[in-house]
Image (tube, rainbow, N blue to C red; front, side, top):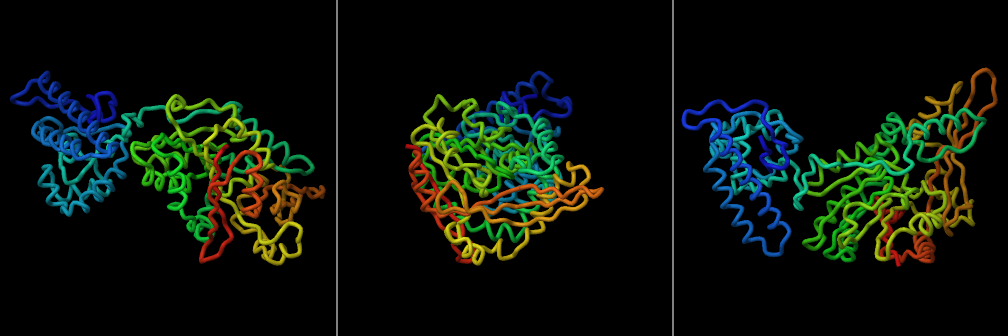
Length: 491
């Protein structure tokens, strides 16, 4: 049978056939089902039009009439079977609970309206049971709940069926097997520098990175103090009513980018729409990010792009290229530390960006100028501590333990680098000293680096290569000012 949301989506197919009804034969039952599907199609259309216009009252009224008609032709004999398809029932249950609470209706009242017990409504809300077709149609037909068809099958407001559309692509030159081979070659040499992207390749490395960056202390220090509201207002002012394509470079687990998109959705002028492209070189991290974004961003198309953002000019343009589009590129989670040369990246790699494109990045702020290394040593908390965080050591040491044959032990230290391309910036190099078995010489690897910037000097530097600074936001936890978010616009 066709989907409840649409005869085109086929995402709510029953697991068994209808039983015979004393008044209707199988052909008649099938025709009524088709009528139900068409009504749900119309309901979705009117809900979408109400959401995307400045005067939604007319379309909301039309939706209410459709709901009444849907209720009138829905009986248990026309939909007692269970439903299969790409439906996140726990997420739907949360949405039902939220809407019921907003409507100030009890589980008993909802149960009476749709023909089930209050206990069964509770089971639906906590995700332990899923409703039958008839129950689901009746829930959609309760005006006070304001449930949308997209709440069930994840159809987007622009009528795209997300559940069955391709949602990822492989970028040119994306070859994780070769990357692992290259990493193994470096770690089994006499020493050297590990390519930054190799630190997220295998699933265990991705898990170790997430454990480190989702620790309570890390979230409090780096993730929870950014004012997404302020940034979203500025971006929305530049985007206007055009479609906004958000390209999240090095998205990691995607949590920061999802929070940004949520705020953008609240500030963009109607009928502006958002599309989110998550781009990362780690399949494991990208999978986590896409799952989180898919489950969190209702009605917003989300795509996963497996690839290296250094190859961005080689990426094919998406399906929105023929429509009026504003593009926002983001490099959140302090991802700029993965750039070998920030100036060349913005000048050369991003040369394919068009005038008017936006770029948003967050950075760590320098504690002193690079010309004063003694002051940096005195003020920078990481250097003052004199050791690498245990969670970072576990993450950075993982590839050595798994791929460096004969490694017995690994110790980490920090070294100050004052010769960075951007004026006013300095770096911290995470050095691994590996003790080898059999009396072989120790090996030294530069595993990772991070950088601190003078925000104004960074803005001036990128302005000189064609990226005009539009906003510099200084922030930090508990009133500190050790972090910055910078928004640029391509001239």
